[in-house]
Image (tube, rainbow, N blue to C red; front, side, top):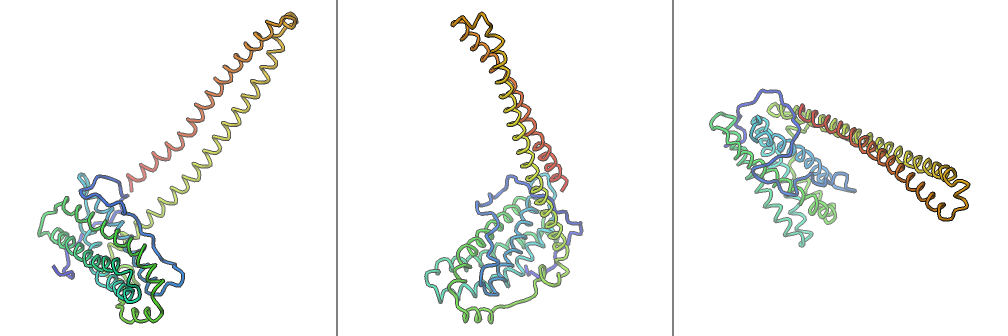
Amino acid sequence: MPLQKKAARDTRKPVAGKRRKSATIAARPPSLHRPVLASGRSGAPEIMVTLDNEHRYIASLLEALAEQADNLLPGRSPDYGMIHDIVHYMASYPDQYHHPREDLVFDRLLERDAESRDVVEQLLEGHREVSRLSRELLDELSRVTSGDHPADKQKIKFLCDRYIGYNWDHMNMEEGKLFPRATAKLRQDDWFAVNAEARYVDDPLFGTRVRKEYQRLSGYLSQRAERIAEDVAIAELFGIEALIETVAVLSSAVGEIQDVVDARLRQSFSALRRRVSAEERGNLLGRPRAIGATIVEQARSGAADIGEIAKRTRRELSEPFATRLKYLRKMFREA
């Protein structure tokens, strides 16, 4: 199905729901995490900075797609139009412009660094596979959004998870192996040649002007970015406050225990003076018994006091965290 065909649009206001961990039809691979992006690499050529920035955009879309795909699980309401828009953009821009620019860099690297051949060939094949996966997923979504085909949630969830996982693996390899190698091996004339061949167009979603068909997606991504920033800020604030409260509670407990020990020592000496009477002072057998009884009595009392301090400290440490967790769960449910 041609990419330019317009699918039925979902006019609902996008709601950036918090992504929840849950069982999936296709298990996400262990590498499903944000790639270590290379932006800011010292001396990186302009095209590498562009590729790094585009990886950031793709990363945000993969996270958004995973969030939307979780709504395909039973009991939730998926936004097929939003999922379609994400995949449509991925098939229309990264597959047609981003990957071909990377191919130019990889081809040039092969001329300078024969040792990189295996990884380069794997990544070149990866670009073809990403394109195939995106078209397969887009075709399935287009049939659903156009009303030509009932939605198969399990199938779409499987296709989304597979697509997301493959893209993460692919970007991780590029960022971890090929981008640093290309920056180190290619010379200035290589970069001039790559730039001369590369095709540049204004990004229809992240460029200077958002194309009409992606305006709803752009709004969703902006809303999602704001929510994530707020969540991170709240989490950091809670973390700092929790640390401060923990230190304060523990410091208070240590101080109280020290006070108990000091008080019990003073009471022990005072009690010893009282119990070792004038008569007992002359009794060598009575003196050790009196001293021992006093020490045991004060030790038991001190242990009981310290036990109460420990119980209260546990409560004081757990209650703030329980309150925060309760608040965070409520906030995530309402998001």
